[in-house]
Length: 256
Length: 311
Ligand SMILES: Nc1ncnc2c1ncn2[C@@H]1O[C@H](COP(=O)(O)OP(=O)(O)OP(=O)(O)O)[C@@H](O)[C@H]1O
Ligand SMILES: [Mg+2]
Image (cartoon, rainbow over all chains, first blue to last red; front, top):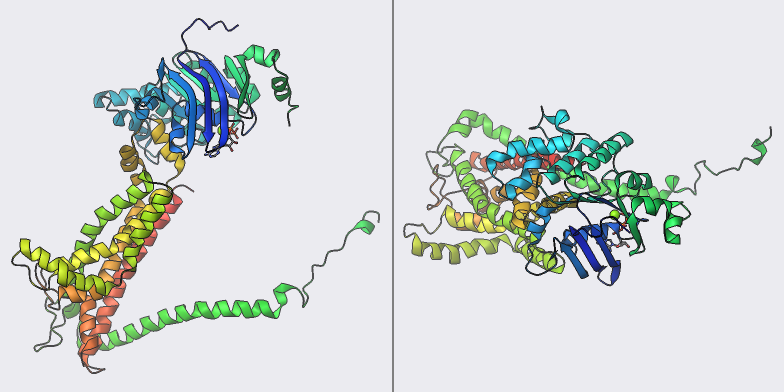
């Protein structure tokens, strides 16, 4: 039993199926995501982790022929309802991608881009930028070069900038798709520390290929295989006492 | 020694049967070489002819008169050889055409790259490219028989031959150039940047205008310069529509003459070879060639910058 089941989930999917044309991306996935928890999605390549993650803030809308059935509820609202504005939704459910993707603009403009488009008060933006960079543990490294190109940062700094850019929107959920896969171990551990501090404020869902990372940063782990959810539960339980044999095989590396 | 006995032997030496040495390889290479030489030699030949006639020309006419004179009357007495009126007419048409083609071209490029996809995009893009296939002479008589009469209803003092109609049809003519080069630049903006922008809650027009367009800025600039150099090199439509009255004036309602139309005028006339009038078309050609060459070099410089950005 999860200790959190009596809390209202911030985000949940109910029997969610995503198809690319006739091809199944993920099938029949039901997971609940709670405030101040980090949920890790693990599983072998091609099992549908990114597909699932991108359906949580409707980033799959841009892929032609995607068909979605089942429900995604964010604070109780069905995000695929025709009355929902996906752009507004994405302001509340931020995303960090596998490859750092700063805009070819200055560091300042990178972070200010979202808030400006969302018509945040202009006077509030400089403070917002400082706060976001501090939260992303990047402020001290870039405070003297805010108006230089973001492309001049190292890969790890760029990824922290992308995290700062996402949190500047003050989202309530943060989706991260393998945020450390392009980074070295030092940059990775900085981002893992960052996730630990960010989780106080956000609901975090992170896709990772790195089992140690899932064990280190997450409270809840969901294991995907071939587009299906094999099991999900407290990370400690999944890693020590998995219920399913597939999970155990995957975690012990017996999986082919 | 043990081990060496097991060494396999590979055929590595050149031999008659190996392709690097064979006759067919050399013939093939030779054909490619000839084909390449044809265009290189032609280019050099053209430049040499232009230069040698120009040198003859400048023995009689000073650089100062040519580049600063404000009258161009080589065919009537007293003869004046100031290129400025022709440059002015050329720029009037080139800039006017760009003013029309740039907004339309960039808007359609953004529309095609950001708003439509799949087969509709292909159909629209090929339709636009059909515009580029229409013979330029058709644009010319379209200007005289349609554009000018229509405009005269609103602008009564518009002359029969005028720079405005020429600029309009040349503008339409270069839309495909600007649109397709810009579209390629917009489409080359990495998917990841759009993901980032949409992931932050951006709307389509915001992503198009504040992420895609600035990221592809240098490609866009290159498209404008390519379109512009096509416009100043355009001959047929301009000769038909704008007339042949060299004027140092930026009034688009009057007849003017561009460098290309002047060359047509002299080439079609009975000016004997070796005369100063005859030589003048080579000098005008050389001037035009330098102008398009410079704009193309600038365009290349911009595209190279653009390519480097995401490497
Ligand atoms: N745009 C697409 N069109 C068609 N099929 C797709 C598309 N994107 C993903 N798929 C398919 O959906 C399945 C799940 O892909 P997905 O990218 O979600 O896997 P993943 O678990 O994130 O893999 P990885 O760990 O390698 O990132 C795969 O079989 C993939 O081929
Ligand atoms: Mg993935």
